[in-house]
Image 1 (cartoon, rainbow, N blue to C red):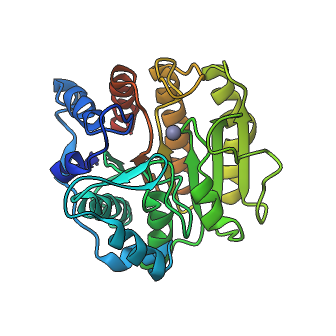
Image 2 (cartoon, rainbow, N blue to C red):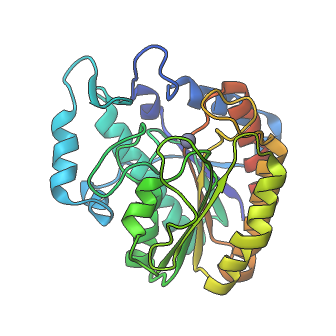
Length: 308
Ligand code: ZN
């Protein structure tokens, strides 16, 4: 079965101010590398827009209404110090949610073994009731809940290797043992959460890494902690919060992963998806702000997904 790729032109219309790292050029850089011949076998599908009720899988209705009310008719509006919305941001965010839930449908209904979603805005900082860190709706959390509600998944594993801690995903699943959330991230760093002592209902696994850590630290975290936890948990699907800002070129952090490290991590999680989850694996773009580092990393990640 092919690897499916979701993206959509509306993601380029979610605008941020000049100099903002989370910018449309990120997706242009990804499109450029994925235009190479080796990615010709990708099953490319235009992302569908979600119904607004999908947001409610992870956020209260009052929150969805509040975000909706922030959307300006023209110009940009600031939700917090670094989270900005423009006139097309609602449609972009709903289409990011739509791609995440469609990807889950695809792997459960046999249209793909695995799926990569190249969308913006990202999601893992969005808490139940709070937009932050460039994120409006928590795409990974909504995908996990959708797997449970629409496809009867009993256990969902989310692995988040973005360089920042996914405080939003942790918040949403804090007391929900049906979702295993494992995160590697630099510490100290924004948003400040993600200490190893934060364990929720025993389902939250935080592996903070010191500035300067390289891919060996990621491999160690996976092999000694995350993969054994996945083996104990036996997930029905694995969702990756795939941020690529731990790449050594990235300007927002000080970890030193290479694109090859992201490839190795991808292969390890695919192996686990094969063992426990009928190969079902959905990968959702989170961060990654150096255009060259992002392009190389996505190429390595998607190249590995296609070898499934
Ligand atoms: Zn990040």
